[in-house]
Each structure stands twice: as C-alpha cells, then as structure tokens.
Length: 448
Image 1: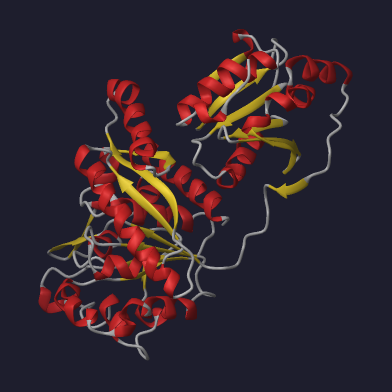
Image 2: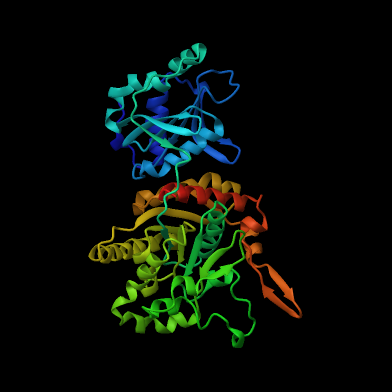
C-alpha cells in the first residue's frame, strides 16, 4: 500500500489515511501501541505511540501531530516543541500530508532530523522506521544507544524573541461572533507572557474601549475620551501620535495600552474617505511606535467600511473569530472578497498580502453532545468549503467570560464599570486556560 497525499482534503483524512491506515502499521505499531486524542494536563495530542508496552515515562513515545493540507507546518513547530517538553518525549512528527517532518528533542532544543514530501513517504519508509519505528525505538531503549541522524538544522524551543513589532487585526464582517472578547482577553494573555501590548479600537461602537475599562463616566457630559481617541490619530498627520493617545488600562495585570474609540468615529467616515493619506496614516504612526510595543491588536468594525480597510492594510496578520453558525459562515465569502481587495491595495504600496492566522472558533456551546457530534463537522467545513485555515484553539461560551466583563465598582453613590480580563478574574478557569492556549498558538504562528 502506498500513500497518496492528493487523497487528503482535510485534517481528518490526514489522520485516517496517512497516520492510521498507512504510517502506524508500516512502523510496526499495532492498535495496542498507539492512542488518539490523548489528553495530558491541559494539552491534547493528536497521536501518541508507545514502543514499550509497560510505560514508565514518555521516553519510548512518539508524539504525532496532523494538520490540514493547507496549513503551513512552520506555524506549528513551536507547539510541537512545547508538547515534547511537556511530555518529556524525545521524538515528534509533524505532517499535513503534503510534507512529513520528524523532530528530536534534546533537553530544551528541537532538532529537525528528517523531512520529505508526502508522495515520497513510501520511498523513505525504511529511514522513517529507523528513526521512530517501534522495533528500532525498543532496541535503542534496551541498549541506551542514541539515534544517529543527519545534521539538518536546529531550532531552539526557547529561541530568542524577534524584536520587530507584530500587528494583528481581529475581523469578521458579522457582529456578535466574539471579536471584542477575543481581542481583550488575548491581549491580557499575551501581556502575561511578557509582551508589551497595544490595543487599537477601530469600531465606532467602542466595545473594546468599554471592555478594557476606559469608560468610567455615567454621563456624556463627563466624557474624557472625546477629545483624544483613534479618530484624532487618523485625522492628523503631524499630531496625536500613538504614544500620546494610548491610555494605560488596568483591566489586566500587567497593564496594557489602549487607543480608545468613540461614537463620533461614525460621522467622520465620509470625510476621511476623501483624504488620500487616511488609509496609510495608521501604518506611519505604528512605525514610529515600533520600539514601544511587541504586539498590536486591532479590533475592527463588523462591516466592510473604511475603518475595517484601514485595519487590514496596517496589519501583518489576521484572526477571524466565528461562532461557526450559518450566517457567520456565509459572511466568510464577503470576508474573503474584502481581503482580496485589501491585498490588491497592499501590493500597490509594496506590502505583502496579509497573513491569515485562521478562523478562531468562538462562543462555542459547551453542550457535550454538540461538542462530540456537531463541532467537529463545523470545524471541518471551513477549510473544505471556504478554503480558510482553522486555528487549533477553541473558545467556548462560558458564564465566566460574561461575568468578568460586567464587573462594577462602587464609587460613592455610583456604580462604575470595572471590567477585568478572564485571566485576572478567574485565572484557573477553563476560559482563562483557553486564552492562554490561544496566546501560545498566536505566538507560535507569528514567530513571537
């Protein structure tokens, strides 16, 4: 039997056709020697093979991670390294069917020891067997002999952080899909990983401005952000720099900086549309602030308007939150067309196409029957029908996410909004863990 990568159209087919039906039997692993969807602490492994049946630790195990054929494997190396470190396994496989890689862990470093194209796996099966086959691993464990491998390249799991600022837009043209929740809690999770975070609210509804606790007034007469917000950043070439307009928000510890939005943004869209530099001014001002922040997150309006366009022109990367329901899915057609037009403009100004990190499943029901039977189908349909990658993380709809956003502070006779991030409200909660996992995935994909 030979493996044909063209037979794999989604992640599930990579798992079944390449790994289960072809690879594991060829490497000598019977059904008693491998496990699928293994949970270990707070991580989930696609596959775990066991060379020695009486397992005392994971040294005889191989972690195998399968990805969608359209996924870039480079985006997943860091996470595989994390899995090998966490489980103390020595070998890991990363494949999308089109490409097949083997990595070896040596203390805190990951060695890239083998790679071939999907159509050449059969021709290289003896080499693969010598590296991670059941019999080969068993013999090496018995004699404690290290594997002899060609020196290809080496990547440290704890590689030094790149210094360039990364700009991520969070966009969907349908509202109510968890966009603001994603922005503010991802910002908090990234700040707790030592990143200097700036959040820009480009939506006139100002949900992110509210969610990060910048609206402390009960009466519009005391509006303290009316005269210094994102509108002023976009209107002025020479004044209102990022540093001047950004406000420190203590909704998270460590604090983040936020460029607030305002409802007045809505009435100035036509005016800004007449100004030639309006689409480029955010790029220019972010460039001047590049040494102050590591990551910028831009919350966008749920529309195809100028402000969404400005965000996607300025961003390096794009996350598309979605509840995976029919209207959100249908909206992806508009999103793809919008991205295509924005990329056309980006080419004119010598910017590369925006890098789509993926569709982020948000506000997903925790109902056990739904998660087991329906969710997988909804996750699979996105790459197949809309040709967009899915992110691995899933953000479920939990009460804690609503409660942390609705926290209030009593000041005299007034109740003042005092929202906090889920990671500060309930750091041990499942929702907090999901955003920690999301932050890891984002850092892995942007090389941060």
